[in-house]
Image 1 (cartoon, helix red, strand yellow):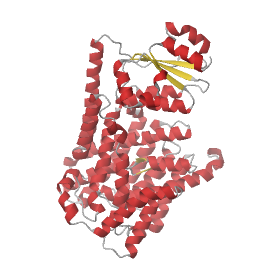
Image 2 (cartoon, rainbow, N blue to C red):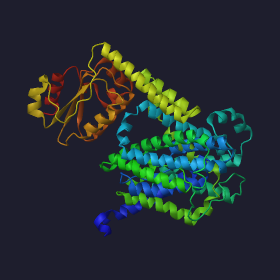
Image 3 (cartoon, rainbow, N blue to C red):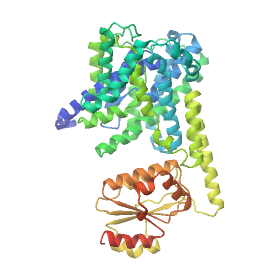
Image 4 (cartoon, helix red, strand yellow):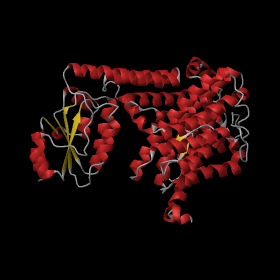
Length: 551
């Protein structure tokens, strides 16, 4: 019966991938649980529930899901807000549990309503600014635990408390944290077979234990299966409903974006196509089940998914095994995890925080359109020092307003603003007919109409992937593209990189001033597309191809 639904030839790879992904996920689950304010066990519960049920019901065969940095930061903000409202963590738990549960239910609804198709309209500067802000929050909030001190719950309060960081630090905790970071970065140069995060966690914890250093530790972790945590969720005071609705919505949206971005990475690695709506339903089911057992919500974890695939995982069985590995740890080794120093967990989270920061987007701040740079910086600052909810809403609103202004300016200049043309049924322009008839099997011509901006980048990238293998060159006609934003720049960059891996030459014709300036400013030209592949008109491109490809 099993073989009818599952090809057993994948089992060895799925088993290996799931085991390795589970090992990678363990230290991060504990660390994210502590970061959330609910304790290490909440991270482990979340990793188990989301890992197993998102794999079973999700739409990405090789996805390994669990607590992630962005989801944990939002969860921590919710916990702090709920405690402020109720006065204690115990009193706040019904609010926290109901919010996590609603967030999962919202994701399930998103899946049934095909909300996944709208995720592509999130502009790059908004996503970049938010993710970079989340990364900085993780780093800032772990500075005090890194040196053995209690930390404030907001970044601004941490910065105000900075003098205590240098006057009251625990040198033993600092030494263990530094050892953790050192092993995390150096061990991959020795071998990548064993995850460096796990090695760092074990070695630094053993050092602290046998030297009997006086450092804060995780403390008692319950062992055995968790109990339901739904007491009190039906008697919550009405004053908390606004808080619950806001954070549940943000968790659902962020978890969906986080998971779908990881799904795209999995697709690129396995040459498969995920089901976006089913993925959201699976993530929602996982997060809902995690919530009722007191676990923090999660999403598709990029690192775990990549490790799973590289270790042989090919079906949803691998993701399920990844969750079961964590369950086995909970049942067998939960007590030992209580001895892990908090500074060691901080030593794992600080590098992860820096990895979440979008260095690519920040590096190009002065090169991309000023409107995009402004949105990115604003969202980053509001995310880091203000409200996560307001940051996303403000960023989306500003990006849309700024684009409408740009589109209006283009219209006033008498330029055409339309949608991107597709390959399917796309007819050659008059000056292409002869060449098209002779070489249509070897050369593709892509017509772009209007600005290449965040609303069309996903469509553009999908169409590029549909180019047949026998095609040797792609000509992108930029005659009617007056403007390109940051999302468009990176979409074009990714498309060209994918095509060059397939051996397809990419040529650009009739670049207008603004697009050309931006392509040069972030080094797509000449580093990725050489100057000799840019032509003033289509006929020059035809002549070049006839010579170089011997058409």
